[in-house]
Length: 367
Image (tube, rainbow, N blue to C red; front, side, top):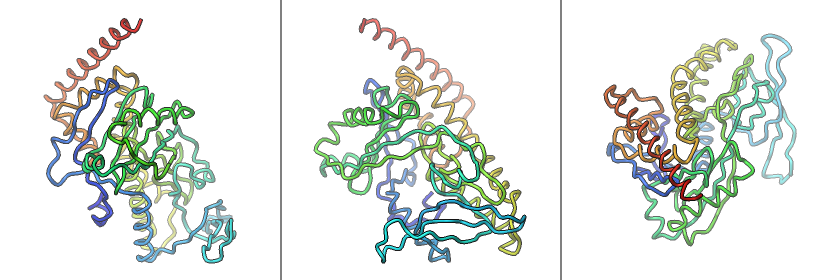
């Protein structure tokens, strides 16, 4: 993403080259052996990245308005303009609540997040979503050194029944969090369990910020209506299993903008719904396989502690690591080696059988 979107390297706080996967029974597997010297997962602070992108867009000619989108009105005539209503906020006058204003546009691209008001206005439909809860924790310097190039993922019913817990390195602190779709009311319990699992490595830390936000589980039923369309989280472009959405937000935004530029012949004609649908068709062609594979992985390996144990065991395999990291880094389902794929299928079945048998034996001991 850094090179594709021409981002300066100083935006990247940490370059993760090591990922530790930790099973429900605290078996840990180190991932990252297959990475090339130039490959890494970049960790950024969204508040820093967003400000950079906003400023760059403004320098390129975009008009930036500080306000809250309220609603839009569709044109009364076929080739008419859309009216956008918003609350304008001017920090210089100190007014609370902002001033209601409006402006007219030829097309609307809703990039306003998982709780998109644009999506609501256009009748885009709902989707299942996870709740992600995260604490920014300032830990002692000696403990921070452990996380300089390392991230951790914890799996188990204690940290989430259908997602994972994490410790990700940021600038001078770590982000500790978890998420869930099915048990949203228990999110703080899962967060406490994640902190407990990572206790020895974050002990002495101070919470400096608490964040929570929804994570879409699948694209919305409807993503275009007339000259209004959706991108990023507003459209539901977040992958299952990993919960990543920032790349797909940027990519869909760029693809949509390119479709508008092409459809408008560089601003000489009015775009229509068919122009926006070209962006959707191309996005789905490129990334639908990725979403589908990760959906299957989540259903297979996040369904029980036994399956999670099997998943972590499989992650010790170099072939699995290479396929996983390549797919994550380059956002595509990587074609595999047929022979290695057969071996992987056999090993997967073996891991699931062993983990299930172990769960049964542990159940007998508990009784």
